[in-house]
Image (cartoon, rainbow, N blue to C red):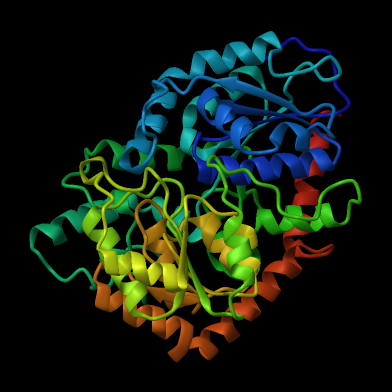
Length: 485
């Protein structure tokens, strides 16, 4: 059944992200890029995320320059006090896949997602983690639907081999064998992917695990989508993008989206020249003043994103490693970063004293600006894909301490394939942290600076006019316009 709608000469594009920082931020950047191209855009967010964006960002002011840009909200099915961090983030995905389909359909049919000039949605870009329910609604209503995957291309490629991967790993874990043994069942990764590098959802006791089943199902649903959008660039992941064409013939690589948006904003005198924030936390900019007083390339920036939680023991080991390295550090320590059972934040006095001497701690930082600061010479990261791309564009080498999902594979590619840093996964030992920080900042600095500078150059070229990502975005916009003719 197609919606009974009058012809619209301008597309009305619905963008619908999974409600988490790492998904909302890049998809909101894409939304702004499409609005800058003259398309009418509706951004559908969960009530919870929308309210946090209103509270902590200039979102309403920033998008007021696009008269036909609409924000709409939908319930994620969870109570407001649900933590939505750590492993509980899966609850959001399960809840929305179970409850959202009829609500989305009603919003589309009733015109709630449009305006007077463009009352109906003519194109949908939805988060690939929603799997089939957005595609079901789009097909019923005759609306082209594209999936946006916010992970790296290399990790998304591995998802297609989950059934074989998980069963192999289960058998392997039961025999207590070496986790550093190579995995040979993911084409293109046979020479460097270890068992410990597999996405966290593979570390299950059996293949009936709910998270494992969900990833396999939603990944296969992407084959039904009109196209696939990836926040990456060809010089970084072109070989795996080419492999993905086997499952998704129409792919748009348009990243790094934050650099892409910054470049096009710089060309537009009506927009600001500093990075726009899509953060869900209150940003503390005092860290920029502290960085101003530090020598060039002397600070290692430490941040584990918006979802990672850790034990008190892990926190203390990381902290001692940083302090014992004698390097300056800026650490983002979210109030909700400790696991609930480890809520005691008391720390040894010697750590606090050393931090006052050569460290700085904030609850949340303006990450793009921090990484671009001349004082920052390294990044201890959870290897989330947005953070990885931001570090690449800034030319900052990384120490990777992955938490879950795509982060395990990302960290392996950073260290072994792209040679942009070090992989510290599955380790929380102060001596290892100290050694790796000094390797990154001192002993191997020249090696990493050379490789990161080259990749940063390629990343910036691809979003400039004539670059691969620039041209792919132009093609995406043109394809959406053609859909209304």
